[in-house]
Length: 98
Image 1 (spheres, rainbow, N blue to C red):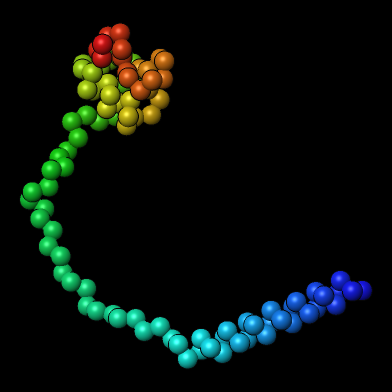
Image 2 (image 1 turned 180 degrees about the vertical axis):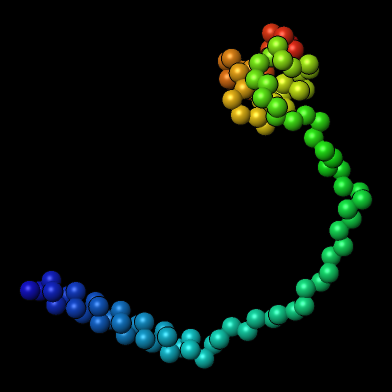
């Protein structure tokens, strides 16, 4: 019974503190400074991104690759490749990337 009274007193005190806090902050509404967005120019001509050299075309094995760079591209970007036997991130270690 004593526990119940303590819980009720804590709840009443918390409610009083909450309403007191709400009354204090009711008059303090934040003012947001809204400005017009500044136009930004984007220079499309000097973009360094070009079309990718390679595309995922279904090749999965080292014997189908022509360079280490190509094998690395396939390993990073294409699904189901079978070029990294020891899973260290270096493809075709015996054939191309040694």
